[in-house]
Length: 525
Image 1 (tube, helix red, strand yellow):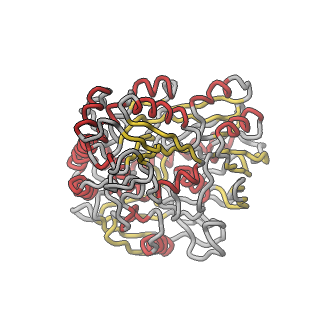
Image 2 (cartoon, rainbow, N blue to C red; image 1 turned 90 degrees about the vertical axis):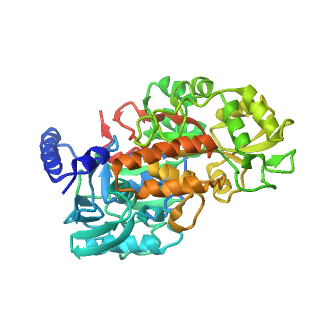
Image 3 (cartoon, rainbow, N blue to C red; image 1 turned 90 degrees about the horizontal axis):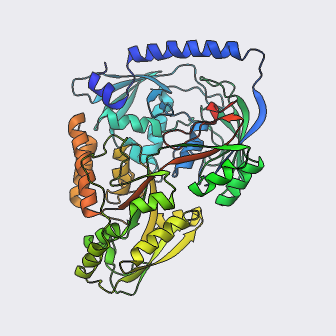
């Protein structure tokens, strides 16, 4: 049974809620069916443009947010979410706690579901997927099984989980793990097979991915049968594709694209507040020989005073107003104000160049130093503004603007001293696990900690927060982590980016809370 506290805190689906949602959905489907009598599924190929090409199409080898956006079209996770982030049934239709400790849960699986290759979905398949992830050291989603002590198939459509962390954390993992079939031909990285609303057709590396509607899908069928997802890293080319009509929907637009799209007469900008934290990661690990630092023999960023000086040098209000034309929220911690785990008691991060210079002098860098600032193409203006702020306090910045593939390698290979990072921080636990916790191969902790920052006190508290079963205690722990991370300047927050999507004026498109665009929801006006 579900506790009221869990339901309120974490949007878990109770049986009664599920019944109401199913009845409401049935009514909506009847209305839609009447409205669509005589209308066939559109044969028009819907074209979506995204900035980054996926490194892999395997559901267990995903890295970027765009990787996951693509994957959710091909694969179903155990739990779905709606456009506002509320959990709804997916391949799991019900979750029931079966012991007083809240550690043992039974999942009821959706019946009658088939993979694109005809293989049935059942408890054996779920166990296979958990085994596949836990036994593969290279699986990028391994961290999402960290909350499970064990799992076992009870019957064909029931699986029992024993947790070591609250369901409020584990349910996020159930959303992040796409399910693959036990039997499949070739590599899933190149030939993906799932149960999702679209099935794989073709991948042309460096160009596009083609999908077609899964006519046997257990959920709603999309209006557009065929879709093409194009990979265009150049921001100007993305806008050109939209305004010329070559693309129907474009992700990865910047504030500098708004005017061109608005003036096109054929496309619109759809915007909303977003949780993505843009921040600066600094090499906090190497005492010397940091790859992008010159002019000094040591690595200044291992000193907290220097990291704080970097933060104090930055005028975030001006950065958002002029660098982002207001399409962002000034950040003062890892989580946006509307994300659970945000600490509302934290003050804005100060802008104080004089104090920044004093801290640099105290740390032994009164004459400053020079640093290479690595950033992805399209973020030049933000890099230039940050560079000017740091230059004002004696830190000379050399911008290194690179394509997304090179940018990703610089981070994952730790070949950077200062890098502009981003994280779609929709859940506070993953934000701290990935960006602040020290790098550990086991469980994928620190997988986005490109500065290799480590603080044993914070590592311990991150683990305690993740594993406590008391929601109020957990919330307090994450709010304290926000304070401690800013005190030690584990990373330097800048802003929470607004979500901007360009769409053809004849389409209804709604970007999700996590920046995804789900093509199954796109309809004609």
